[in-house]
Length: 313
Image (cartoon, rainbow, N blue to C red; front, side, top):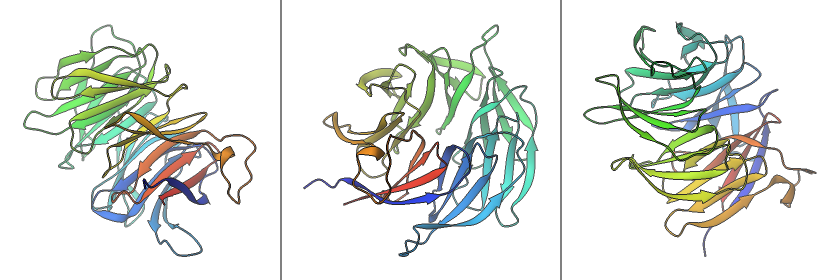
């Protein structure tokens, strides 16, 4: 019998929308959340009977909404992006900002870390993508002349010739070659702004979603559209399961989980339809999603500032 996702616990985490969740690749117990309350929280999974996780660190410094947070694989550092037009590199031992990254002229919507932890990429409402080293120095800027669409999401694609995967407010996806600062390919198809991108654990697939409610799946090797899945609502976030061929999409009307082998909708998680201790009259939109590294727990961040933990049973 196929396991189903069940709400395990609800944690009051932030006083604003939870906008981002990041896990540490090499430390199962550590994850981070960023919020519109300007705060980043570093958590440790305890799984005791009183609480699933406890706050270990609080990172203060940004002067506007946190848009994105990325933990280093060892869980010792974290990069954050904000609507205050800056990035910050944090030392999680001291909870201090090690570097501020200045250069974007408008809100930064997304940040990503290269697989070797040496480069950082950011995307902004100023229509540019910037490439940085860990010293806070901007090494390159990626932008098409006279192109004014916001950059909504950025991802690093590792390889011999690294690529930056980026999505835009006009519904376009672009692949940039880091070595030449040239566009390798453009992937059209969406009929509205794109909010999010997700790359599969093996790096072969990309999923994109946004205003049109369509999840588009792309073959990153062939750089072509494979198929689409309909969510029926605006997509805020996407994430692949680390150990199952599943894709999760959060929307204002619930969280969809698809089996990508069969393309079947496995789950349509709605808080107001659950038989739980928490009485919820209407669904509370989820903005951020992330699986724990071992695929045991599914973490969702909502606009009520609460973190919800789902387990497979």
